[in-house]
Length: 142
Image (tube, one colour):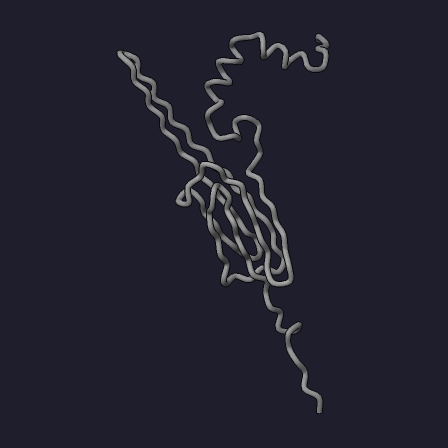
């Protein structure tokens, strides 16, 4: 077994043309291929609702699926791309498909009146909180 100093593998990647070839081949695909684990999501809440913001640059509205089930908000994204270049006798065709899902548990989420909009690569979702009848009930005094 050979000991390799810390950082040596990265240096090797820079010197070895094979790594550059593979990076070029996989580099244009969905960021998951480059070690990215998911799209970024911010969640905030106030007294009335939850606000969810998901960064989805380059994704179209038709490629997003949103669902809410038992307090779990799921955001699923599917990205399909096809690229074709032809020059003289040379033809280059590439297809890639990737998908990701993020699920967030919102403890007091109501199933009704959920709104969502996609604007400038950011998905904005507003999920109202349940109105617990025990909390909002008034008790008459005899």
